[in-house]
Image: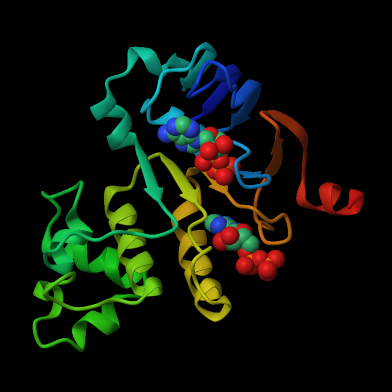
Length: 229
Ligand code: ADP
Ligand code: ADP
């Protein structure tokens, strides 16, 4: 479940300046496809289009064969999870931030997601545990800790489709390595679109798409694309 297909997608924020000029690709259910390309190529725009934040001008985007224009935005939001580059947390408790999107989750489910995201041991050292406040008047979490909260949230929500938009870009390389292993766990057996700006780092992807000037300039496996460089 969760096969994503872009078919001849054309999109422009400003009609005089096309961003995507006929982009077609598929992310088979449960597979991981990476989109790489220079800054400004339109990578993040692809993920906004999948959420239907904007309507495309031509072509189609489907999930399991269903055109997303026929799907409510609420339904899209519940079937797609996203880990962005910089997670902004709510000024509320850690538990609230992990539960966001699945408020009905039990305490045990919430803790289990935190354990899997490798944040559990850290939270349990806090006097207030999961009820500790974060944000302005609470705990100040590091970039890596915030990403772990985002990962725990995504694990709890368990969406069929996942978007990782430069999810480790803002981290130092040691932290990036740790977060990457947590991300690998979340993306396993889940339809995943990874947005990155470097080819050298997306080793796990089943397919890599290089987006340039609004079109797919190249695609293939990691080995194939590296061999060409
Ligand atoms: P990437 O993720 O590959 O860096 P983006 O998808 O963020 O690229 O942006 C692609 C292009 O669209 C850029 O030129 C950017 O300036 C432009 N753009 C992005 N968001 C908007 C917006 N909301 N309104 C107008 N132009 C935008
Ligand atoms: P390099 O080692 O080539 O200097 P980095 O390791 O800093 O590059 O990573 C390059 C970019 O690719 C970063 O933005 C990184 O977050 C991104 N990236 C690589 N793999 C993934 C992934 N699976 N999910 C999210 N982002 C990824």
